[in-house]
Length: 295
Image (cartoon, rainbow, N blue to C red):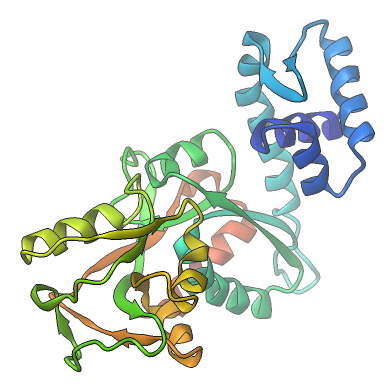
């Protein structure tokens, strides 16, 4: 079993198919497909059912995922244990972040870290469901997760709070809305909204806060892609609740933005296993704590 075969296998698992895996790896599709076939031949098992153009894990494939992640995590951690002549870590650090935290604070934290440790490359994955943050660490997806708190099922892990994320109301350019700033949720205009499914996001808490204020949310569009909310608002589809960092950008693009009362916010932070952190991971945690600012 070759290390690149393990990496390609996990890429197919994580990206739900060979085409997307090849794109993520920067390789041609036949190279990934061939590596998977060779791995199956070497292990003498079928790892995927080929269903049309899709790839579905077999029972043997499911059994390999955990050990494969731990194998790859060991190699990446070893790369992160290398230090330069000045004693600073080099290699690679794998992070996973919830989408709404990627622009702020993750970009800022990684920027500060890279200025101090330019020899470490940072790979950032997408945390689709925040409830899975702890399992992402245990299963070897990454060294550190950045997510909203509290982090579920994290009793055996370390959680360090970094700040809080606040939400604002954002209306399409030219909207005739009350001048109140902050705007009381009890006075929320009866405008259609661009929303995301509740799932593991803040959307459920926002909806509950609006209902407690005696108002309701009338959806104009329901988006699976959270990052598309602002373009939809700017296009006049409806209003939405946006994270402060995105709302600030919305003002520059002509949107009407109001703070809200009562305030809707949620703390965020890092989740990691301190016993398993590489020197690069340890350095990132120290840098993040020093760089963190309150929400």
